[in-house]
Length: 142
Image (tube, rainbow, N blue to C red; front, side, top):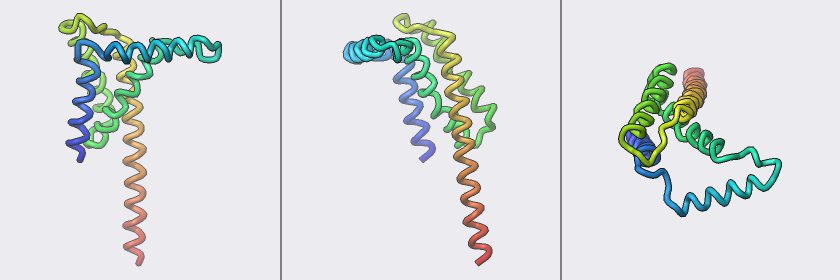
């Protein structure tokens, strides 16, 4: 199951980051309309394309951190792996994809997302371990 989840995530990461364009004209139109709607209100006018893109990059790399922990890696290895993967993506975009924009902010957002994923993974692993220990204690005491 972990292999399948990792493969699916890797394909999705490639799909979003290493294609010539991240989305088609229809998606761009929907995004422009959504951002225009947000810009029309003083309460949400701060939600710009840059904010949405940064947040999307953070969210896109959360599974990376979770998977790193599920594979049994140390937390810091997971974060460094996310940073390295992001650096490879941004370098590939700069060198081989002239229609894409390599950006240091993406490196930051992707690494932040990985770190958040590592925290989520550690919390889930801890909860599962504690639950398993309770079950083992219950079986042992009966």
